[in-house]
Image (cartoon, rainbow, N blue to C red; front, top):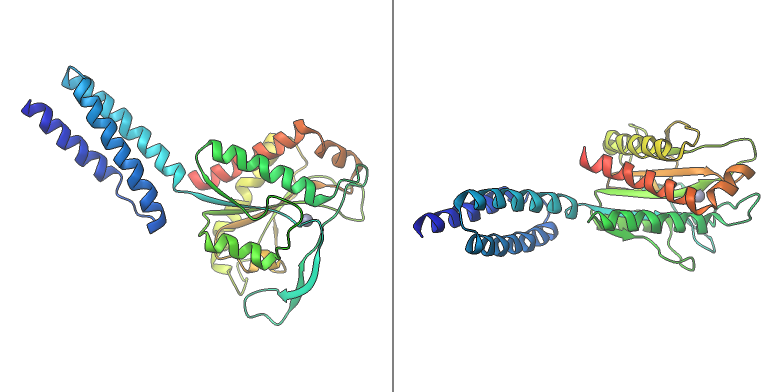
Length: 281
Ligand SMILES: [Zn+2]
């Protein structure tokens, strides 16, 4: 009996020690509740198991399981489906304190062949990425879940900032005059960005992870990572961010491809894998 009791105390101490949170208060609460559940589970396990050896194995498995769950649950991902049904041409500062003003949000481009608007494709993909990440246990916050909204690019960045997002992904598709252009690229700030240049290396890494996994999953033509300080939605970010341009709606072939469910699933899977790679490495 005393051996069992001793084992219980050690197991509890091990669980508590291994789960010492180093995150924000919001995350500590989530972790504590998981830890409490595990303590219950560990106690129940001990009461029903016959030998100490079996208990040790079970405790190790439980602890490992708990650690994995917590690691995933502690990440917050904010997904922004670019644009909305109706643009808003009012102006807002291009960066915090900037006198340069840009339009709040546009309605985006549209498919040259399919005529599908970009804001629709972006939301389809955003919801697919959301489903994949939630299935894996991540906490996902969407900047929008419908088309009839009015959320400026600054406001989208602020949603990610307020959520203290571990990753803020912005999903877009491109449209240019040159109809032969195809492929995907990601965007981040330069190291000299006056607002958040200190986030450059982490955003660059995030942009690489997402682009690499997206290309691997879809087989799309790989364009490079574009570093620019012209994007309002990037300049206002205080958290790791990247913007992916998944393909060219101005290219008839790519436009049609991007409207197939099969390719949409590949795109979403690639984006999700990139986010996971960035967060887990
Ligand atoms: Zn766009």
